[in-house]
Image 1 (cartoon, rainbow, N blue to C red):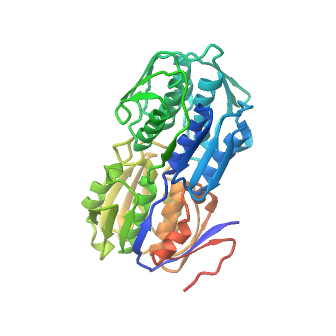
Image 2 (cartoon, one colour):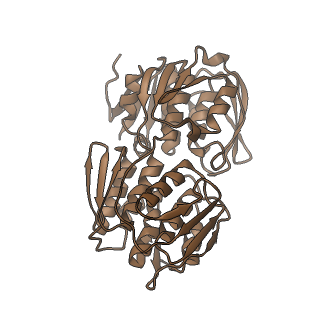
Image 3 (cartoon, rainbow, N blue to C red):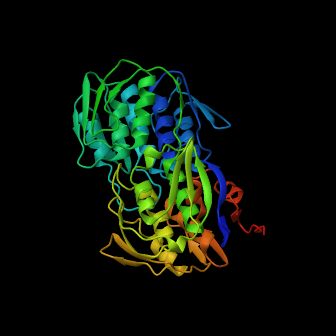
Length: 426
């Protein structure tokens, strides 16, 4: 079993460059299906989820090449419209191949996706959106089958909830639909804006990305393009919070501060010294115990990101006072609190989606289980400040979203190792 081994008691100091954004890269890889030819994506992270999405496209007949952090995908010879079950079940984001396939080829078949156990994440937003564009959707033995033999047609799509992946799926389908599509209550995340920028570079006409109303004028075809993936705001937030928790001094490079619209003000409210410098954010904290606490509620962008909630919980165990965390996006995302409590955090859960975090707490190293991708990162964070050695099982979750996580932490002065039974350096 692969694990992270973390020795506590070291301040993080130095510089770290964040990788390309996982949640942007995956959708851009799917977008390559829309064009006949080779699309090139730069700044793509070497992570498990990217390899899975690449394998999904290869299984459809695409040819790809991953050199350094540059991924090129030739979707000119697609011969299958069925995404392989054994790959799709590993990652929920793979459902985004549904829109591009049915838009370009008139048919698609994708198994109901898997991934982190974060609770119910309904697919009806995706399916209702594609139905509005004229696709016929059937659910058959765990597979989603979409057909549009006469092509898709523009329509008004109203989302009950601003789902990121559903917005992206419908947006990618609509770029090749006849006429105009209007998405109301669409997701406003920076990753949605980046995807729209790529689609427009490929020849699409997408307007309003980053607002709740996105207008897409359909075109007959798209062309391949070259595009750079934005920096990962979640990885940046993780390193910022880890630096604060350890009382460190780190320059986090490669992130746009505007992509952390709610997180940075909340961290400043806690007392974290954040300075915006050219190319990044400098984080300085002399004594985490001198920091205060804060309440947070997760919401779609520009609210506090659910993907940074667990890391904030770990940070609040080291600050003074009491803070309430309210999880409004995924009902199972507070599972990490139980593992933090094994380390002595003393977090109280109530109401099913709230946690009361009191600090500062002296954490002790323990064997803990990563409940999901971001929860695993938060447990590594907790291990950085705990007494003794922390062993984080379920490392496969963490590797789905963080490139060179062990190496980056080590370069900042942490004592971290990854493997079955690695030796920690001193």
